[in-house]
Image (cartoon, rainbow, N blue to C red; front, side):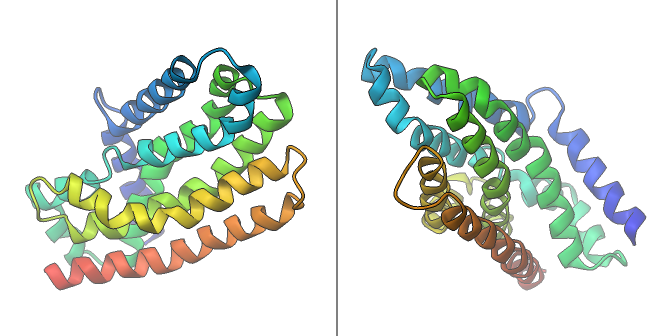
Length: 222
């Protein structure tokens, strides 16, 4: 079972890292948003530094949505999902493996690139470290929440817009506490640990609830 789980993760990573894969597109989209913001707001470095964490987090949320609609849809179209349903691997572990692969190719690169992109919004080294830590902890929650929407829309040919409408409201708590934790690290009135631990709790809850809900949605469509 462990071998099947790791093989599924490796398979999805290989598919995502091909030319035009969602991982590379998400990173490019992330860079485009962060690059455009300074042009829109002007050369006010204090303003950019103040809203920088919110900009990076919002860009990460939107970049996570890229390719999310193909999380189960591609396997549904070529019949692979039917084979996965019949395999000895429980459907919950199948969902977990695919969500993990999506995070490794989308969320993790965003977290690692955040300090570099923070230079574009005039963030201090301390702020860059806080952004990297919050994205590392918070982006898995975005993936697991998105997995539920991807499972619900897996049989729709153009379900990307519907998927965004379904999951974006559910991503707002993660966005709020991710930005709050990053701002708290810059000297806010709230200790950094408070919103950071809430963000970690949101990720753990999303991992459990999101995996079970996505597997249930796939079973209903069977």
